[in-house]
Image (cartoon, rainbow, N blue to C red; front, side, top):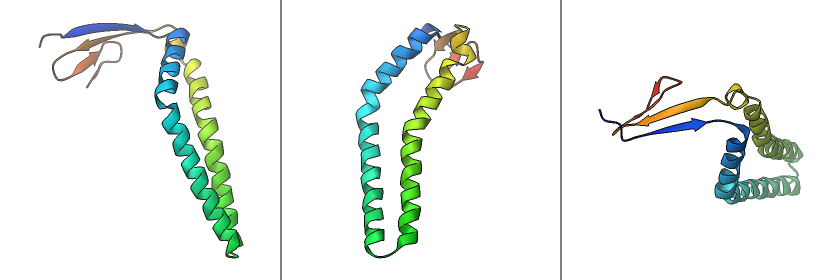
Length: 113
């Protein structure tokens, strides 16, 4: 098989920050819209539950709403902090990606896709 092209990528904090900026610009609107939609839907269910005297269901939905909000804001920050402290960024590791017709190879990880 002939290589189509080869790409060497060095992972460091600056490259990761640029990666985050790109994904924030690309996916931030849909992520925020999805979050607002589910908050509105859960808030409507909570309102209807308390309005129809189903207090237990309203409390459960309120807890679910609080957990959802905490998850949507805490989870991405925890992933970013974990990734910034990872070995591949701290050690400035370099991966070589070799692209072929139907797959590609990552040299440092011995993975084929």
